Image (cartoon, rainbow, N blue to C red):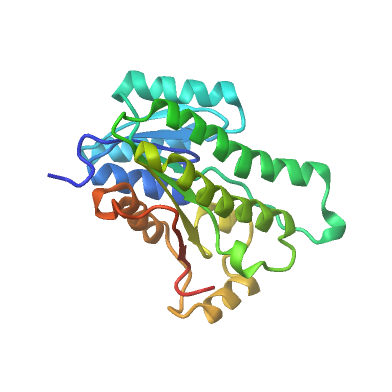
Length: 249
């Protein structure tokens, strides 16, 4: 029997990158997966098609995590398709670097609305929809909350907030047998890091040079940890922030 057999997982921001990798790995471990996306329907449908082709179960549901109405619909659709939720992966996130002189209200709200408010709303929706036996919430943070690179004041602040929320909600939800942990990746090769120009840049080369394992991450590196945190293998883990950056800290 697969370790996530008969489990239902919702992965936000799962149309590409780390989220897509996590969705596919959870499905491969036996979970029925809801692939949430904000704008990339083609990407989400591709992830679903790959899961189904491999013998898994998945649907795609559009919705912005920063919208309460969209989050409500996300979990309504999950319940209709698969039943109560067992696993939530709060992966949806955006990043935009800029020096202090470049920070604007739009720059601030764009990142905080998705990375922080979105995580809270999705968690709120999941808690109301969880299996009565409890479940697992996995927040995707970032090593930037530890290494705080120049030019990342707002982004690092959002990920620092994710760390704090993880610790608070682990204490708040433990009595309901809901575990809350965070995976904080280092630099990962995704469509987003390619589009942003990070791959092949000086930033990329410096990241490799300062990573003890000598490379940047791949989505599967993060996905394998998510499967562990979603499964009974980690049943005694909550309130943990796992740095997943090849040794960067």
